[in-house]
Length: 249
Image (cartoon, rainbow, N blue to C red; front, side, top):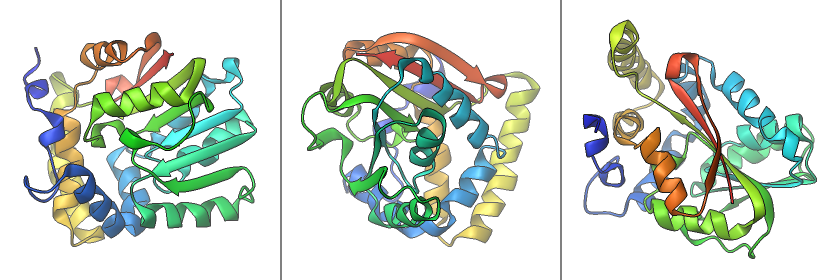
């Protein structure tokens, strides 16, 4: 087992160990919402747009008409889902009202307010009816789930039989020059940039630490299987720094 996966990622929290992770994350994302998109571009070398596009194209063959985007944030994945898949409707959920407020502005700018709804919901206790969606997406958000199994069970519940779950998540390179370069980039450049963008340094430390602790690869595939999902496709982008998981109910 890789050492990084020995850390319980649910115990990695931005501020303290006493308060629930979900409450801390809602507060954290509300605080950094106006800088998050810029920071995400820096964290992903500007490649997140390409990763989103390529992963969404993997869903195209299934022609999903009702899509749920979880950890929707500022609605990037919602907007791109509509752009590349042309569904009937996209619903985005997130625990941060401030992130969603910024997302609504972006949705309005591209004239998609009748196609995309954004609402505050906790993925581990969603209020949607059973079998409401053809597909669900999570881009760079699953490592923030406080209750991973409960959240996956909720996603399974709201998906139609045969529906798909698409997950995009960052990986930490494990060896070689890429590992050394990545460490230097995140520990020096990203941290300095985070200090420049926001006074909440703990938030950006959390984003890196949670990625370090999250169980990716075969461990995540096993967790998905334990919650009723069958793997269709697992693909690594950009020398393995980002992974796509496409699973089916």
